[in-house]
Amino acid sequence: MNNATLAIDVTGLVKRFGDLVAVNNLALQVRRGEIYGFLGPNGSGKTTTIRMLCGLLTPDGGSGTCLGYDVIRETRQIKRQVGYMTQRFSLYEDLTIRENLDFTARIYGMDNRNEAVERSLERLGLADRQKQLAGTLSGGWKQRLALAACMLHEPQLLLLDEPTAGVDPKARRDFWDEIHRLAGEGITVLVSTHYMDEAERCHRLAYIAYGHLLAQGTVAEVVENSGIVTWMVECSDVYVLGAQLRGLPGISQVVPFGNALHVSGTDKDLLEQSISPFREQPGCRWAPIQPGLEDVFIQMMEGAKPNV
Ligand SMILES: Nc1ncnc2c1ncn2[C@@H]1O[C@H](COP(=O)(O)OP(=O)(O)O)[C@@H](O)[C@H]1O
Ligand SMILES: [Mg+2]
Image (cartoon, rainbow, N blue to C red; front, side, top):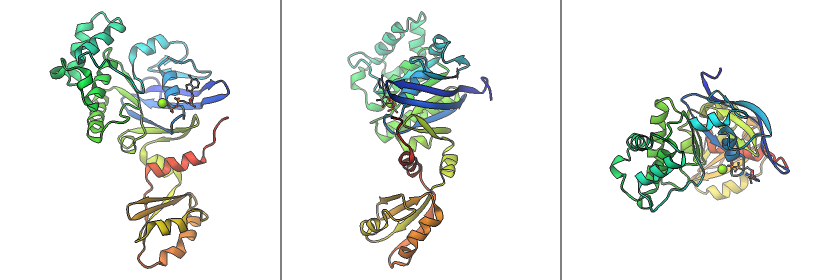
């Protein structure tokens, strides 16, 4: 794959802050027009990576391209074609939707400001509400306005840093429908999130912890490659059973889901040996199930080590 098919193609990215290696030898390949999820616990280096990709932060090591431009030398060109929605972005609550967009366009020094604002209002379905004060918008509409603001200059690539943190499920769904619509138009989207349902709506995703890339691929590939095996058990007292199972050889996670437990591990035989005495217990129903992304990520995080 080359620049024609890859929007982001970087290898060996490193960023240090003093003794801390915030991003450690990270390679990332994102295809044009895809929605790429960026997952990992807080402090794992997602924001730092995003800032290196859009030219706001100079890597201490590594190389590659973003939209075909060199991430070290051609940051000016990259910035022009990338829309970056920062984590905890903020808008001016006492300005209207239109005024917010107009103000942003002025900061960018856009010469076709009115056209750009009009286009952005139309494109994100904000035209009818353009006179509404941003402070009176619901969380979902605020999100959409922030997206409109980072799309004023018609970027090819969107870098969205936890755009839906704290937003209710319906608004998150609307926001994601919007992202899919934009991807359908050929825009590439790299989006960081902590929500598993959002991860499942990405074409592909990466999981990082302590600055290391731990997994990359489609949801199915990530689950498959994790090697995790999960059994579900339904029983009358999940807490008593849970306490008995925790800590047994081959069992790394015991998680209650209502009246059931999900019991996971990476060594299939050892896990099955450990649960076998409990499989005869009356009132318990055991079945192997497909592990969820969350089980996979928690497992990976526990296996990862800090760099300091
Ligand atoms: N400007 C900075 N100076 C020092 N440390 C930083 C700076 N930016 C980020 N870090 C540290 O780098 C690590 C990765 O941070 P970040 O990229 O924000 O992670 P994430 O976005 O995944 O939560 C964290 O330990 C954070 O405290
Ligand atoms: Mg962050």
